[in-house]
Image (tube, rainbow over all chains, first blue to last red; front, side, top):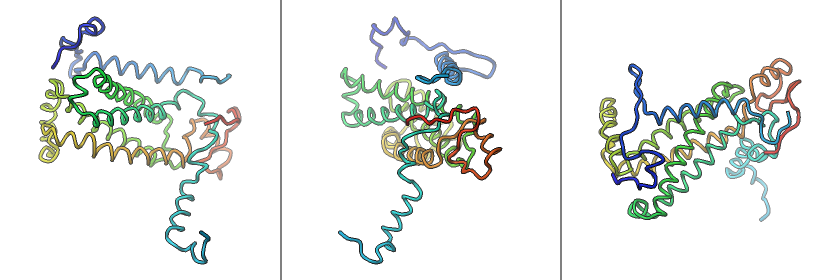
Length: 56
Length: 232
């Protein structure tokens, strides 16, 4: 695998092993947890935020 | 060319009538939508479609120029990254879309096949993305494929779906699975157009309470719900 250019390395440490979280049998990468949480946040916001250009 | 007596019985005329009856143009491309679609939760279906178009277009460019281009040149790496990140966005939007449809029980009003085709498209997308991940030609793809082969062998499909066979995975990824997925997605969208966008719970309950004879595929707004329609 080629090394990631150094200009990216400061943003995300892509040349080192990823961070994993463990709860009993659950073993998941931090990146996946972040994506799942982001989806949940977007889902809730989509339900509660008023639609663009719509008067309530 | 003028129509001749008996033309209406020809198979072309019968097929045309059936196509128009099944998928009327005004339902395929409606000018306005019910007022309840003016909500962010109704945006994620079309967001998924938009991301899918970017996935297909960027994948087409990758296929045209090949791995020596997209692994070495700046433009190639950009399109390669565009392909990956549009897939991430595609799944993100699709999962939020699916949660929204699940919690509003969007299979109501004779929309079961719409839900089923959506669920199959989701599973098919996972398979398509998986074959893409094993094509990355890096340690990640080696790790994914060598781990996956044990699982696939344990369920008996490894003999004809061999994740260590690069050529076979490439064909699955760029030909077979996109073709199947394309058909399912088009089917899903046509069903959405034909049956109409699933209404929220309250709207549907009001329709059932107040107008049992109403066509559930073209709901009318009940009291308390904005009656105006919004442009598509």
